[in-house]
Length: 94
Image (cartoon, rainbow, N blue to C red):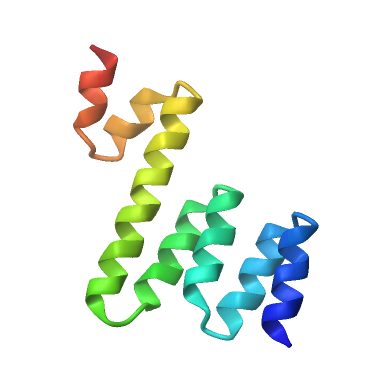
């Protein structure tokens, strides 16, 4: 039932509401994807920290970091990448 409701919310682009529903039933992978759709990086990272085993947690953390970086690049906010500690942003600025 919850996955149906969550999917319907995604279909009508209510991403944050869908993410909260998925998160409440421990469907962290779907919650992370929904949070990423609305650029809620911190909320997505909170979900990723709940994922077990640790190997999967790292996969989600890397996915979030990469999507955040791509978003900053697309919106020409390269300095945000460097501020976040990713030195590859320096190469882009150069």
